[in-house]
Image (cartoon, rainbow, N blue to C red; front, side):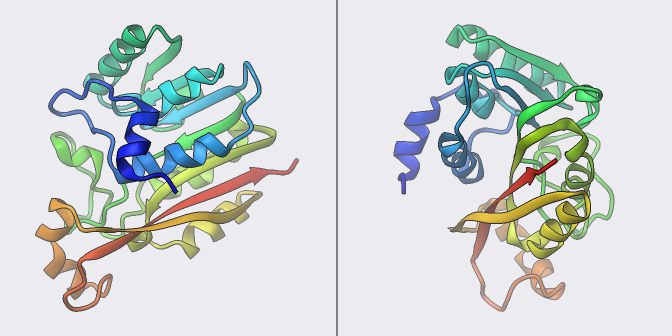
Length: 228
């Protein structure tokens, strides 16, 4: 297993201006899973919620044809700049999750969506919380990705999705299965709570999402294949 420092050096250090999600443990865990994928030259890859473009650039370095999507204009501009600086070709589109890629087909879809349970039932409209808050159960965006991925995958294509176990692993596996994909957990990693989870640990305990005094969350990578 790569250390966080080793993984960070593998994926590079993209520019991450204020307001753009910087690579963290979830990004690096997904980058490790990406490294194991047998991408052929010219494979079509979609990176959903690209942030600073870390994963998009990692796929492009392997010769993939990469499309990166983000809802935030600042993230879109940052990824374009990082691709230019790295001398890599990445198509970067602004839009809501899978919508900009409608009608297209991909060999691999990557996603590190917002997945943190939040006291507010709706999604934030602005500010840094856009990068992590996902409704009271943390599934507002994860469920949409599960429901919409199959129609964007070529036969034999796969989804690599990372999220916290706090928003439920079994619901993700079940939802992907209902969408016609064969899904399994391929990676798990426990990490200390960051500032956001620490700040709402009392609320998470009240909701039964963590135990008393719990200070770590489990990240999971879910791989889902389209068989036909």
